[in-house]
Image (cartoon, rainbow, N blue to C red; front, side, top):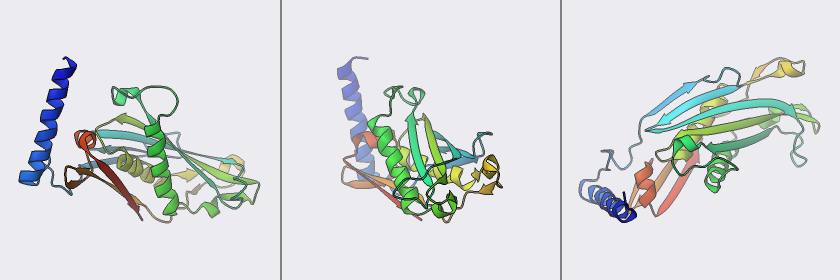
Length: 220
């Protein structure tokens, strides 16, 4: 289809979304303004991972695997374990996603997810110390986006929290006992965007494409 025809169709779709919200208080998919899409969660999806989860949020789908291994702490936090988060936008998920180094979008999503988990103090990092200033447990959160239809931040947060909640620290790998990852709370994030003059919760792809602002709130 020629580019100008695509632009016309995009404008028609944009106007439809805006008018439906303005006149009916509903969104293009029939949801209320503050209504989220259906969420499904399957944990322990990856047998060899310390913890894992598959999450669908509407038609958005992500997979999270948690790996935990012993290593050195950061010099400025010698008495805490280490948390690191990575998000990969797989080419199969959306036509514009490309293989290779992390994109700006994937880095931003990873930072928001990581900050929500870290600032809520979901994990008691002090309990992940093996030997102060020498050895701690390092928690790697790896999230792959399988299908993309909007709101990756919330989908990735749900997946990360679900995977961490089932994770087991492999103490046996250093001659100690295995134990559950020390979880203190389970944070939740809610993402909103501004469409026209209206705020909507859990935007799908079409809403994100015409949004003029975005806000994510994470709370424990």
